[in-house]
Image 1 (cartoon, rainbow, N blue to C red):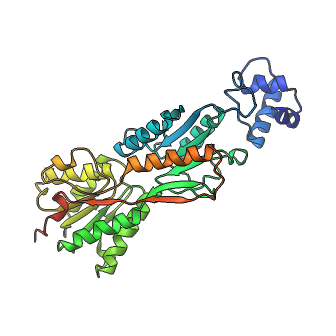
Image 2: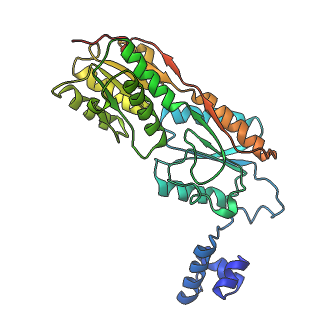
Image 3: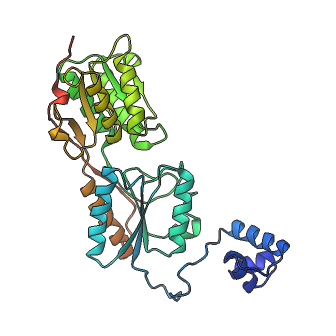
Length: 332
């Protein structure tokens, strides 16, 4: 705050009034203070009134996930929560909705609350612009996606390998007309799953230029429409790889409506509750969100406790679970 006051040419009390949105400051001084705040990337310390600046911990962690409503994120959330609770740490959680601006705003909000560490799923092109330089010594662990522009621990799934495994499984059951349904192309995991899937097809002699790849399907309804379009096309696929659980839900619904649940093979990426109760059961490339969450919690606690080792990426292997939908033979 002293730096802001010096740069703006005002007193510290004036800076305090501006950042706390109190009255009594002229418009000219307010503008100078706000410019200095932006230039210095000053963050108001929300805990300053109750926590002395002695390096004491707040015993809290910030957790940022794509959406806590998504079952995959929900399982990660619970695993981290359980691990932190065992150490007496509280957790603040929020959904990013895969919005880069929301990511930046929520990281800033957690930093103002002086959390002891951050666990987040990145979406911005560079996390160097999300986490200010003066806060980059804060313990941070990235989950599900690796960061860009910053060195930090990451815990991820083997996305490309999982995509390749889905392709190999469908090929092994005789399919040569396959289609890919994918999430947003700006999401790292979606790009990796698509890459693994298509590269495996190419290795097997399939002309990937002929493989329909419908992307930017970020919810169930978009996937539902895309699946109907595939089924109504001139040369419909006999097998579909849906690369995210919400995309799988949309594909399942469309297949059922078209009477094709037992005709078109389906392999989804991400397991989900009651997948084995569908008819047929849904074959999936299962991630292990509980392991990802547990490992992420272990890493953030180790960093908080002073682990100074070089940042690393931990890969949690995915698993093919066979239930019936991915084993259907080509219908023609």
